[in-house]
Image (cartoon, rainbow, N blue to C red):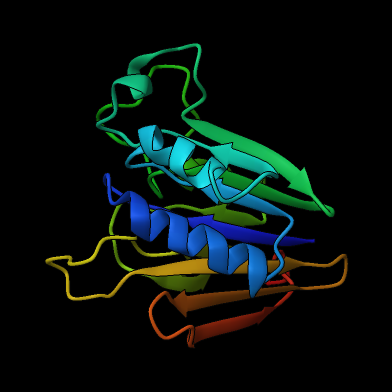
Length: 182
């Protein structure tokens, strides 16, 4: 199973469409997750992707304060417990019932945390949990990183996580292993 990760599109719809097309054609993904900011952009992604989209709102979206919309989604895919969230930790805008990513990770309740918010692409291995931030999909960003997306290959025996530069298509960070092993 191949999962595409996008985050922090902030209304830059053509860049989001470009990422969706590349995830579909070049990476042949099975599911896309949009990790917030802006969840209102997801219809543009649906223009180029007919498959499943997992979406969570960003912490400053109006949707984030609607208890009927999940701010964090925990899904098991190919045996991996994946938390989809905009932030990697608790946030001041969380609702009282929102789970805390850092607590779920510390308790061993998740194998992978897919998050956005910082606009900084990263893959880190911490406490037996794989943390993946695909970066952002903006033309320009004050943090100095170009637009990027993530790809997770989920197999029963291992996970491969990649961060991909949107413009060049180059994989600039790669991690392979089995989360949960300390």
